[in-house]
Image (cartoon, rainbow, N blue to C red; front, side, top):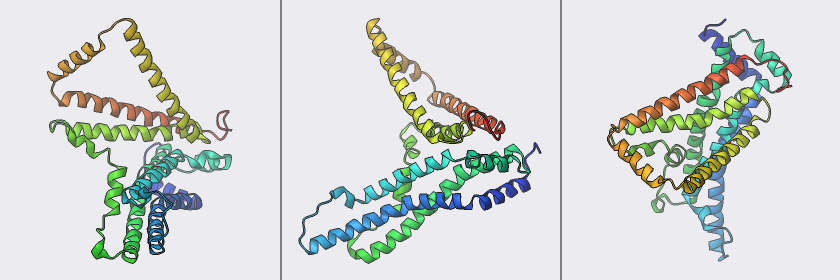
Length: 296
């Protein structure tokens, strides 16, 4: 069973959704709560504001809580955290011995099981996130109709605002020159996918507490980057290097290069790095065993 078969893939999907129904229900409720609770909180503040105004009571809460921008921002932040946690549970079946036995003895190939887990965390979770935002949109519209008079209230689409906040890094590529804005757009998408792919990579390496290890890795990586930049700057100052001149000469060199060329090189590099990262994740998943020293 080394080849991919769509029937076995669907069988894996049915088995996983049936066996881990409680786990997926908890994940779905957590993602939905990240979209719905900020809406309820926002309108609770609105109602509290009306009550305090009617009784002439001074407000004791920050004014920014009344802002619609804050509501969409909270949804984006909370949902981003929830989706990150979902990525860290890509191989949740391997967290204990019983789950590993059930996973590794399935009558399906490694690629079929791996692709199903990747589909759940990369596609399924984001689709449910957008559906949850839609539910929050409906709830927000109902509460607006109850709380406000539509004639005095300019309704703003919550879905549009949240999607703009959550995926706002994607349209920023349009500020570049038209000749290579598509390449910059692709580079931003690949960079986002690289950041997301670290969590499944660590999950394939460590089945438990992998999210904590991933966060620690990010902290150490940023600290190492800061130290390297500081060391290079100090070394350049000691050696009296003309850093500004080197910077301007580099810019002058790229002015003579077609605008799409550097972005294309960056896209190829990021795509190759993304491929290697997922290849490594897949290889570690294929080497999974019931018990190891790293994952007892």
